[in-house]
Image (cartoon, rainbow, N blue to C red):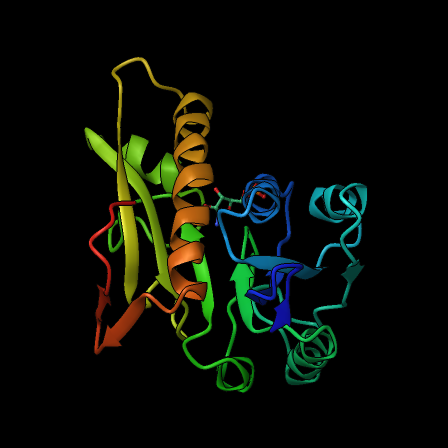
Length: 216
Ligand code: GRF
């Protein structure tokens, strides 16, 4: 934690991403606007030329590529240690996944218990995994949406913090549906991360209780 100019406690966020980083930008703007009482201390990617790294550097936020190791869908043990070490060196209190395309395992999660969150582009538990908006479209559902959840060792299985619905239109393409889902993500994720760092969330088994009555 650090203090801002008024002496208010500010959490330090570490953001992990593999892609273009639009959710990271939404989080960074929300931090700068004071909507999240936090700052983004570091951005780490497993993809050397990921857009998220450029966008972080453009905003003056430390950003680095850390090699993920030999596996395609997870970090190997050595890489998990390197990621945790980088986050700890940056003084990170909470880890926010923003399009990070690898599953995190025990070593990482034990370093940040109940302090790792993810955003997924569907109403979980429907359509876990890759290209969830396309899965929803192909299945023919009329409503899909966005889920923010705590991260456990499964794929998109952790306790749910917040969800928002997005209607599927008859003439939607995968691209048009994904675009509307992302617009909702950019509102919901900052709101959920703000509640997290304010200590407003209580986990009871699979259920996450919000200790304030405010809406998302
Ligand atoms: C988002 O759609 C998020 O739900 C998923 O990965 C995507 C990341 O997009 N986990 P961006 O890199 O934040 O633009």
